[in-house]
Length: 259
Image (cartoon, rainbow, N blue to C red; front, side, top):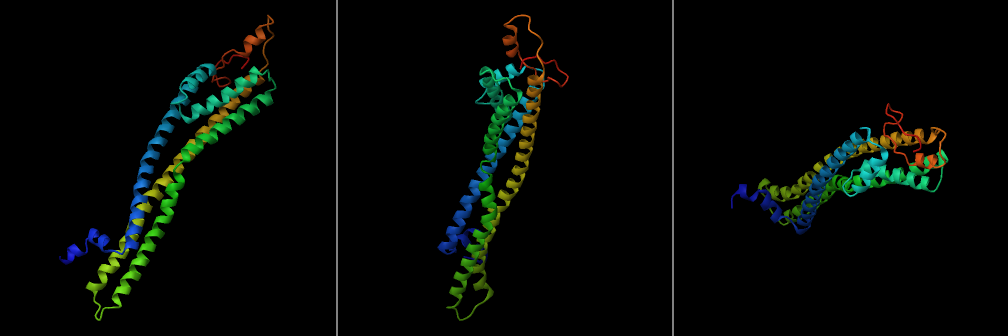
C-alpha cells in the first residue's frame, strides 16, 4: 500500500484506536441527528411564518371575530400559532360572557391569561430542538479534542518502542488523532449556525405573536368599554352581547356594540 493510500481519511479512521473510533462514531451520529433537526426545524419555522402571515391578513381583512373564531375552531389541527392564540383568547372571552361576567377588567384579564398561556405553548413548540443544536454546537469540538488527545497519547505510546522515529512514522498516528478534531468541527459548525439563525427567526415569530396579542386585546377592550345603546326591547341587550365583532374595530372599520 502506498503512502497516499495510507494517509487516506478512511484508512486513518480504520487504523485509529478503539477509543478514537468510538469518539468518531458519536460525532457522526451527532452530526446526522443535528442535520435532521436542521431540516425539520427549517420546515417548521417556514410553515409557522406562512400560517401567521395568512391569518394576519385574514384578521385585518374585515371579517367578524366570530367568523374568524369559527374558522379557527374548524381549522384547529392545521392552523398556525397565531390562529391558535386567537382561538384561545376568543374561547375564554366567550366563556366569561356566557357566565354573565360583564366587568371589563375581569373579561380582559381572563382573555389575556388564556392568550399568554397559548402563546407560551406555541413558543415551547417552536423552540423544540434548539437546545439539542446548541448542545451539539458547544460540545462536539471538545469531544473531538478528547479523541485527538487520546489518539496522540496512543501514538506516543507506540513511539516508545521505536529505536528510530521519522516523520513517516509520526505522521500517521498524529493524523489519526486530528481526524477526531476535524469531525468535531464538522458536527459543531452547522449546528451553531442553525442555532443562531433559528433563534433569530423564533424571536421574530415571538414578536409577531406578542404584537398580535396586544392588538387583539385592544380590540376587545374597545368593544367591552364602548357603552351599548339603550335597547328598545328587553331581549335587545342579550342580542347585542352576541353580535359579531369586526377585527378592524377602532381601526377604521365598523364595530358592532356588545362584543
